[in-house]
Amino acid sequence: MRVEMSVQRSTRLSVIIAAFNAHETVARCLASLRAQTFRDFEVILVDSSPGDETARIASGFPEIRFEHSASRLYPHEARNRAASFARGELLVSVDADVYPHPDWLLQLVSEYDASGQVIVGAIACHGRRLRDLGMHFCKFAKFLPAGGVRVIDTAPTANLLVARADFERVGGMHGDQYLADVSLGRALEAIGKQLRFAPRAVVDHHHTESIAAFLRERYVRGRLFGRMRASWLTTRRSIALYLVVSILPIRFARIAALTFRYCAAAGMTGSFLLTWPLALAGHAASLAGESVAYAGALVRVRARRPSTRNSGAALARTTRWGPQ
Image (cartoon, rainbow, N blue to C red; front, side, top):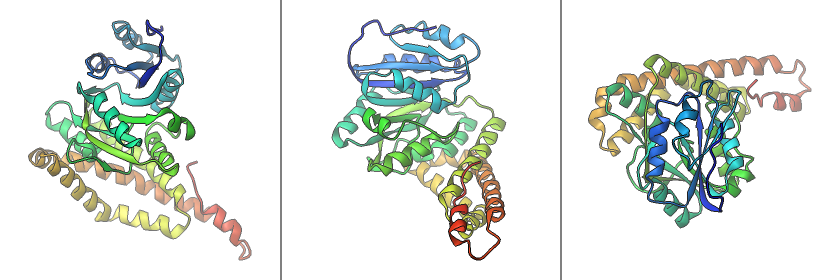
């Protein structure tokens, strides 16, 4: 099923959305986009759900372009496909389970016009259930709407504006189902772009997963990130160091302190104190996944170590271990 824009024209901005079994949230997401004060944009939704619920909902929004994939797409694959249909000079990535505030696009575009950089918007929590807040603080404490515009080190695709030219220059999004945003941010930084956080460009994230699913996702993401980081490291010693500080409470304590600081800056100290067991359980699951990855990396590096002393160059190459 395809629903296309009724008027074909150039547009300043293309909002690209990846959806999979998002029928619980996508209607409110699209309605929030319809209510934006900034109007020069199009919406492209790529869905790879097995059912037709999302397609049915999308049919109620004839102003969007809807594309359905018969095969399952990971979010970065769906975003790349959406970007291929986009006509805007700026691409804005958003998730199907977030609800943008009415001035969201206006704030993103204003910050882009002022800096010309990659703009990361703020991610607030939809709802005030303790389980929702706990999961949110674990995932998005760094991106709570607080403080001023500043340079950050990652680019979550739940709320991100990037110039089409820059997106194409780095080859779009690549990686796996959880870490394509990490790869994209590093690639954009490598071509000299800053990742600038705009705290007034706010979306509300709706957490629909169970606590068990949340903890599994944190573990898997941690393991995948550990593999990625190990591929950046060049020696067994550096990999071993990350393994040690991930197993011992060194990194855990630092992450817990940072999470508290971000929540306090956003005026949510009380909420954090009520939900810290879940938020920190998520961080512990992620660190457990990383530790498993670092241990596996050490085994692989050791297995690839040359048996002779005259193979220094080969050894240097084999220690650049990457995801298998």
